[in-house]
Amino acid sequence: MLRLAFVVLVSIPHIILLYTRSAYMDKHNEKYTEEQRYDFAKWIVRKIKSHSFLETDVFGKENLPEEGGYVMYSNHQGKYDTVSIMSGHDKPCTVVMDEIRSKIPIMKPFLALVQGSTLDRSDMRSQAKTMKKLVEEVKAGRKYIIFPEGGYTDNGNNLQEFKAGSFKISVRTKTPVVPVAIIDSYVAYMYNSLRKVTSEVHYLEPILYEEYKDLSTEELALMTRDRIEAKIKERLPQKKRMKFYDKNVRKVEA
Image (tube, rainbow, N blue to C red; front, side, top):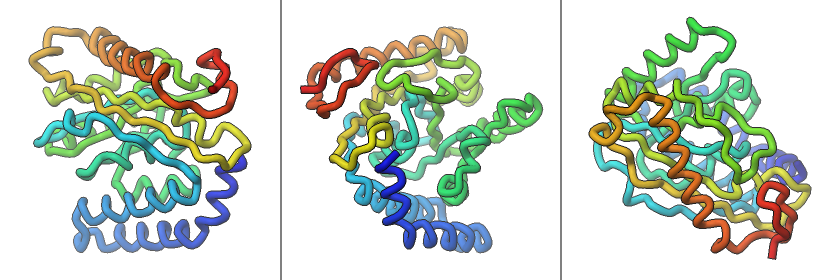
C-alpha cells in the first residue's frame, strides 16, 4: 500500500487534470474522437507507471486482430491490471468494471475518459442491459477488456474460475476471443516497497469464431483459462523475479 499512497501523493496534479479533462471531454463529447480520448488516457497511464516505479513488458502484440471489435479476456490480480493491459494496446480499447470498484475516486474519471462500462452484480436487469450495450459496441468495432474471474483477492499468479457468462459477448458477436495473460501485476501494490516492479502482459493467439462456434460458453471459458494458465506456467520459471516471498508461487525470489 506504500506504493499506492506514494503515487497518489506525487500524482495529485495529474489526478486533478484527469478529473477536469475527463469532465470537459464528456461535456463536449462531439469535439473528441475515441482516439483522442484514448491518447490522453495512455498519457495518464504513463505518468502513473513512472511515478509508481512500475514497468510492463508486453508480448504478442502481433496476435491482436487488425480489424473489427473483440474482447480481451484476462486473469485478474489487482489494481494495476487494466493499466498494464492498456499500456501495450495501441488502438483504443476500454474496460468492463464492477460497479463498486468503478466508484473508487481515481477510477471514476478514468472510466469516463475511456467510455467504459460498469456491471452491477446485484441487479440482473442491469446486467442484461449492460450485456446488450457491450454486444452492440463490440459489433460496431470496439475493443473491450473483461476479467472473467469477476474479481481478485490474494490469488497472485494463480487463476480462479472463469465465469462463462462473460463469454456470451463474443459468442453473440462472433468476434475473436483474445486471451491475455498478466504476470506479477499483483506485486505492484501488494508490498510496502517502492522498489521497481516489472510485470508482464501477453496477448495470446486469438480464438476465432470458427474455432469456438460449436462450444458452450462454459467450454470456451475453460479453453481460454487453460491457455492463459499455460502461458503463466511457461513464463514463471524464466522471469527474473523480485526478492519477495510469493506465497502463491511457493518459492523464494532469487
